[in-house]
Image (cartoon, rainbow, N blue to C red; front, side):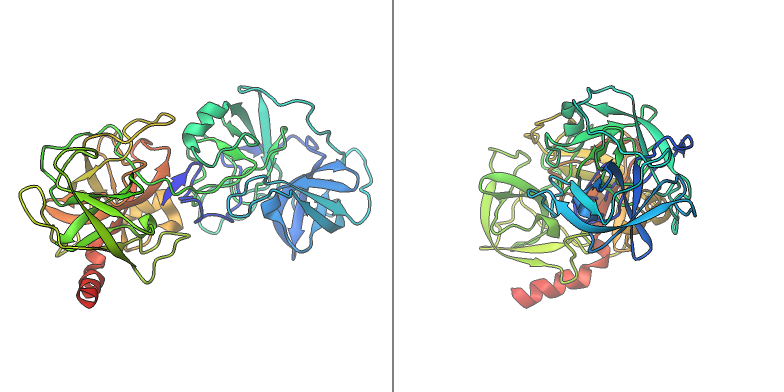
Length: 460
């Protein structure tokens, strides 16, 4: 699972679908500076923000759709006796809204009675034009203000200065989820951001959606009007070409002649990879460091065995065995690799290898040669700071000592070799790649020895 930033573990879209958003490192808004901003409650719990665009209509985002709401207005305080509350009677979701991707993430909410306008309650006009990149903007909301477990919503309305960035620039961060009807914004200092339960970007009135797993301070733009964590595979950024023939057990999985993921040969008839790479059929290529050409051998896969506890929303237990139609013929260029007999400690020197993209530019292609990067295992405690609740004990993290190299799109399933022992397969991380010192998550193979052996034995 690759998390589009701001975090995510989307980490793959998906894992953080309903986390909402936040104002991190913002400040208290000037008093009554946003009299058109409202709070939407469901069962006495804050759900989302919205804006009053007509005395009887509130504009918000479609992924906030609930069966009923109380709309609160007229106060910067989340809890206030002066606040006015009006029941919502109907919700009108955009007809093209997709609840899987949050495309066209916009909704109108009709109030049971018109709001009474005053100094504290005003309506806001819809934009007459689209603002250009670099414009000065403000995002306001009641989202959490610190990233700690059990953090509560801000009691006061919080503000942060942001600027829209160009579609082309934002596309580098969100290569597939970004659409022309979305807008991206980022804080100039890279420090403030929206977070949980902060669903509205102002003044250009576009919803933001958290694409990550609670690490709200990452320096990537907030995506306006819909985003999810994206399953983008992985990558080797700033790595070097692997020594010729140094990874004879590494294989490439193709579908419809397109490279999908990497894997390792653990038995002449079995390949180990990650479950989020599952496809309906594969061709498994082995015996060459070159992705195309060379003296590679190709064998069709017949069956895939995903771990029974795999969760395709969170990528928990992200491991899969692929059975080949015929045993691979072992040679100098094609070898099987042994499973680890023990788990390696933090600080251990390792190498990750793969055919993932090597530069962070739009339309980047996979390298022709197998790329390698030196990394060290990161402690569970340290990695937990980056991935919070998404990190589990059956995962392992590694990061480059210099903070410059990293895995990226196309590296999913790539092996982590530590002192000659296979310790992990690339599972996920943050996108864009090459965030300084950002660890990457691997499936911790020492925890799955029994399942691997039992599955191969039962299905041989």
